[in-house]
Amino acid sequence: MYDEYIKNAVESFEILLRQQLERSEKLATAEAPKDFSKLDSITIGLIGGDGIGPIIMAEAKRLLMKLLADEMESGKVVLKEIEGLTIENRLALGQPVPTDVLSQIKACDVILKGPTTTPKGGTMESANVTLRRELDLYANVRPVSVPEEGIDWMFYRENTEGEYVLGSRGIEIPDNLAMDFKVTTDAGTRRIARAAFEYAKVNGKKRVSVVTKANIMKKTDGKFSKICAEVASEYPEITCDEWYIDIMTANLVNKSIRNQFEVFVLPNLYGDIITDEAAEIQGGVGTAGSANIGDHYAMFEAIHGSAPRMIEDGLANYANPSSIFKAAEMLLRHIGLIERAEKLAEALTLCCETEKKLVVTGTADGDTCKDFADYVISKL
Ligand code: IPM
Ligand code: MG
Image (cartoon, rainbow, N blue to C red; front, top):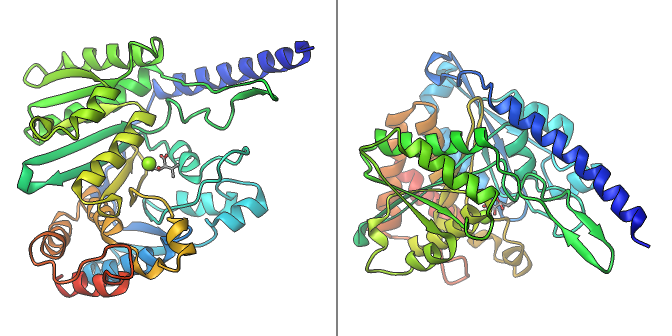
């Protein structure tokens, strides 16, 4: 009775395999990365997103307008608002990223984006996953620091393959079984490993920790582990160690060893999970920025989601804009506006760590998103 299902599944699988092979071959022949220092003008696309997204993004826009007033005046930087990446519009059009929105995004150099809602189940792909694929944003870079504990972590999460690339294209036999696929390519692993080791080298870091579950996911994580070890051998001055994701999750809450880790490199889903854990250790997911970096585009965002519960509870105005502000800081660094990025970083350290005159808690006891943004902007 399952013959028809099996036949269809095998046919779909062949298509998936061929498409993934094609993707893998393309990766192996990548062009040289874009050099922002050579551009006369840089266009920053601003996307509100869903839930608390438009609220924190409105503050991020105000902050950028203050910080980049001179660059905007001279035409060195252009801010461009992009509408239409909302869950309502995406569902109405049946497209995770509507075609016209995608072409507007591709006309920009970098993007600052509020969180977008991802429907659970169904077949609608997450907008993030689509954008990461379409713009080939292969490195999800997430810094976490707790200065008083000596924690200074940098996560390099593989961002375009692993459990995510076919996450909306699994196979199901109704009321019986479901199967998803995880894909790891040589070229995809090599480029994220190289990004992590290069970061370590350039920033004087001594240790890169590879995190997998290669004892269980033998093919995919096995490959990830092997290729990271190969890349590590090109960096003899950097110690490379490998951990399984379960014990690494425990390590991050082990105060006696956690500050010894520096740089992490890991497959997509483990990176997703552990960076939320790490952000929570820093003070909450509302406090961490996230960069999605490719060779031609880059997209910066808050580490957290659209917070539908805050909207339901009427707490949207108490959303913490710190995470999107940190993302903005990473964006400025990426496009080479280092002095502007430093200025923002100083203001954020003052407001979030040292002076702390206003504190956003995400509840009505805390300060509002707007007041906190005013506070940060006043320090620029
Ligand atoms: C993240 C988010 C996304 C992910 C969602 C929104 C698809 O959790 O950026 O960490 O799972 O990657
Ligand atoms: Mg996540």
